[in-house]
Image (cartoon, rainbow over all chains, first blue to last red; front, side, top):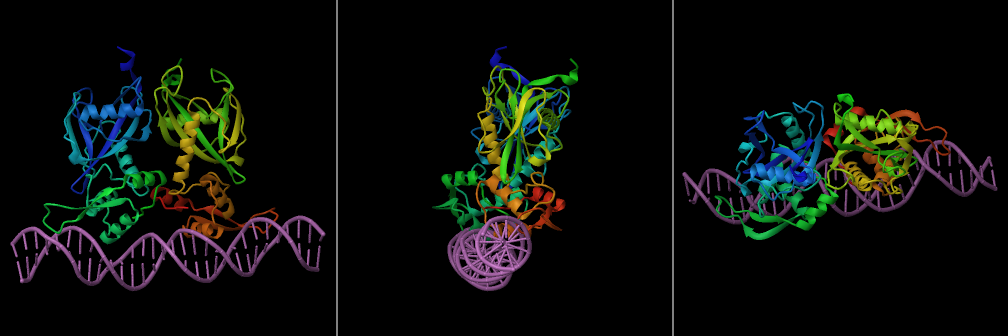
Length: 228
Length: 228
DNA sequence: TAACTTATAGTAATTTAGACTACAAGTTAT
DNA sequence: ATAACTTGTAGTCTAAATTACTATAAGTTA
């Protein structure tokens, strides 16, 4: 075996990929196709090679199992309880990402038999401590969303204010007031209104917006308060 | 060697311990007493044993090197660049803590030759990527302080509003308005005013407060906005 | 054309933030 | 003893933000 293929065997990576579509929030799971957990659902995950950084490993693992690609993964937490993994001691680094479901055609990679989006409220029993990892990660997202902008990756390039609101509602699991949400969002200067409108909808067409990348990045750096 | 003493050699822990005293914020560093980094300053750090959890390892490592004890360490980030450590591939988990400097008498453990508090603005050149780790951790703290209460561990049990304000000023590196700070803090219901007053001060004695543990914990869970 | 659905604008009461003033209660210097 | 000084604490005023609404506009569908 080449050194470059050697893995660090005490350390794994697991990914929580959140996806949004039709006002509901989902998470991407794989069904293991081999090994002792064959047939079980789990977060996409795998081993880190000796000569790749954690960030790159996370990206490689996720894309090889699910065909999701070109997304930004962010580190979230590392889980290091002694007995979280059977057989031997394995510590796992959890990454998470937010994506627009419609952008990806899923297909299972070589080691998995299935790849499916599950609604965040209907997540099945998973291998190891993956249910715990998911729950903590979702809760982390709920907090985070109140201090930093999100949505760049969860929505189409151009979206309506209602879509954005439904995204927040799906993450925070509560209803928000429409006029107030609009006002707050618009005042942030985060949104650029395009001159286009929705098409093919069976009601009054809404104006389409896009994010102002500059403001978006500045708000990520600086943070804001979106207490809802 | 007993299995229980075996270490996971690709994985280390480093600790950023923030301390507060006399309105200034410091970080706890050790000077290595052996090995290739002998004589260099560094964050307290070490190796994880095969049968201890990460949280326990962090605590063991910190207490064995610095004699700081009974503190709450929280995981912050994991640094996994390929070449961050010379000799071999080592990924490090960073923990951080906030403590009241006056509570601890420092003394160097067996593998270090010195333990010292450094003002956060006067941190020396350290081993490996420890300066990067520290900088990111400090910036993390600055963000965090605006959404969650801190101070339980950085201040004496009973403290004045000015002490609390100076803590925020030290972390955020900016001056705050005194009356407004008071009002905001008091309105949070986080502080319980004791009937006691400062003693032995050469000016009007201030009222002493303590944190309401219940509210404190609820605010950590729920978060708040302290945009200053 | 009425009923319906969603978009969007506006209003009014209340709360909060921010800048600033004033004064109270002690200590220290003369 | 008193003035000068230091820190604590209360209050005021203005602008801005939040919240809970109401109203209306612009389309689609029956």
